[in-house]
Image (cartoon, rainbow, N blue to C red):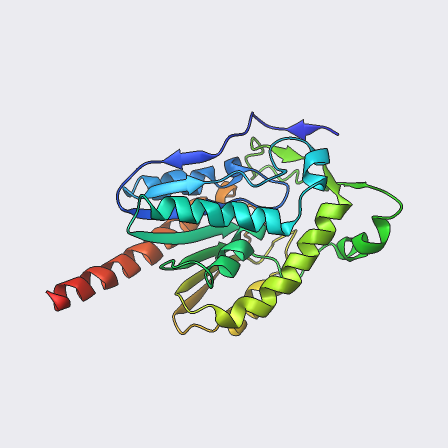
Length: 257
């Protein structure tokens, strides 16, 4: 199985006492969210982008992992960042966005930014994975040849069906947790997403148990939003969301003083 892109490592951008854990997607790598991470770091915030287990190496290793491994790695990053920062946010792309929403119930984070989180997948063949896994181990990954994308990030060209089955299990598990989310959430979804059905964002929005939530729909937006033509708009929305919550916190401190 081949891989594409440059060598992979976690990313860390040191900054002030406000931190963001930024999580990449299924079969992806930190590089697919790096532009967003750098934009957030440019605001002076501390940004940590973990490399999820089984990612950035080879598909055989990914096949030996499951959603609990991916969630545990993201949660570890939150715990580590809380040792450096007073206030921590979660953000993520695709599966990383869903992990962010899932962990918001278990970790004391300030807010969540979720990009193109999956509830419904566009490729309906994915739902055959629980049956096909017994006759084949891997399936070719559909390539995104759109010239708008900066296809320089590491990615696998095949998907281990065992890992895909685990992803489907995680989606079912995480969607049940959505009503438990109480922190502010910003959802961003492209209406031309080729991987995740945009109806996923509407479902998440209405299932969230919090009051402070916003759904930003991007016309023409594809799946890899931090790498696409709307990446600046995505970064600006994320920055505005965090700034708003930071201002609310500062106002609360001022009133107590």
